[in-house]
Amino acid sequence: MKKNLKGFTLIEMLIVISIIALLSGTILAGMGPSRAKARNARIVSDVNTMQLIVENTYSNGAYPASQSTLITATHNTDGTDSTDTTKLNAILTAGKVIYCSDGANHYRVQGTLEAGKDADDIIKSTVSGPIGTCTCPVTGAVGTNTLFCVGE
Image 1 (cartoon, rainbow, N blue to C red):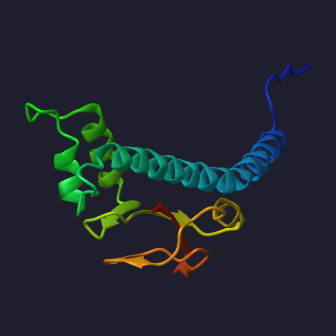
Image 2: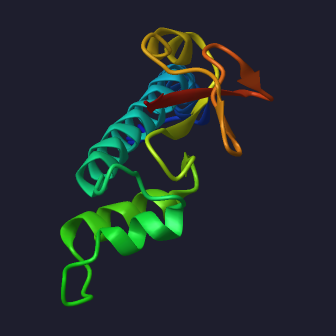
């Protein structure tokens, strides 16, 4: 009498599982740098957005003196949140971008990038030098992070 067996053997299943594990490990290992690059691109975008908001709040020959003054300056005339206020709060809540000013005609918007080749490529047109409590080194690294600054 012949046995008619259907299905996979244990060996065949183990081979398939090991091939799937190998392929997924290779794919996930390659995604790490892409995610860091995406986070850095987001921070640069946030810095540039914040710079535009700061430039829009320039009045009477002065930039807002602090982050809280900047948020207040972006409110609508009736005291409600404008689109800029909403964007600004989202950027500041993320904690990767800060604003500082001397309260007159100089300011800095500083973003903290993840260090690496991508961050080094981004650091091309940054501003250096201290203003108040905000220091933006052009290529200086802080721990595992690199600072990206814009301002005048």
